[in-house]
Image 1 (cartoon, rainbow, N blue to C red):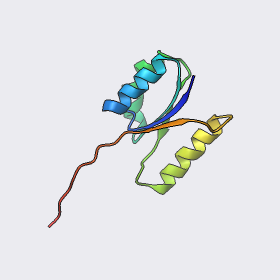
Image 2: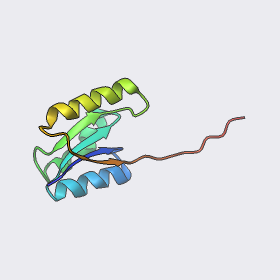
Image 3: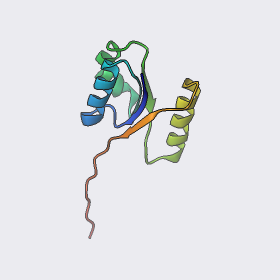
Image 4: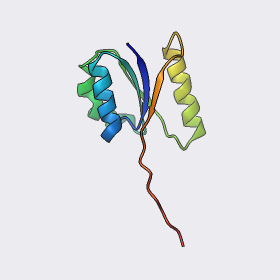
Length: 96
């Protein structure tokens, strides 16, 4: 079994990664911007592998949030060895 850290875990591809990985028994640290909505969106996946889904609040544009999330993961693991999946959407904005 592997341990995964997935950003963008509450929607789209990230959410599907969470479902697939929990379905095979892996441990998943699911990084989300808003814990309240993520709990609702991901609660059914917890049943796939009870105790192996860890929701982590993370805003990747905020260094304090990144530090807090990293510390939370570090405290939860005996050995810091995990796989990372970074899911994001890049939107091009033009300014005048």
